[in-house]
Length: 71
Image 1 (cartoon, rainbow, N blue to C red):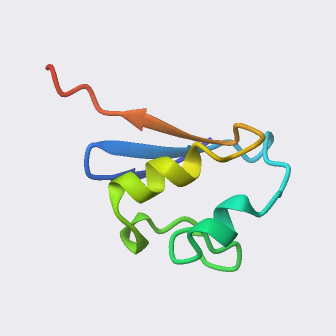
Image 2 (image 1 turned 90 degrees about the vertical axis):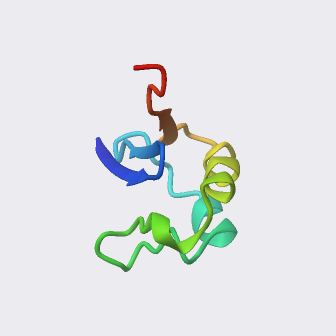
């Protein structure tokens, strides 16, 4: 699993689950670029745009982890 931080969230990517549907790349190409290194650059969109796009991942390879703001 790889993790990419953005503000109070983290984008988690599990490569073994990925079915390469391309939803992420088509939805937010400035964040998800399979040719880039790293391939996820959270600076390319707002927190809310990323959350919305990650929710569309059909395989569940991408997920959002929310920071515990109560501590």
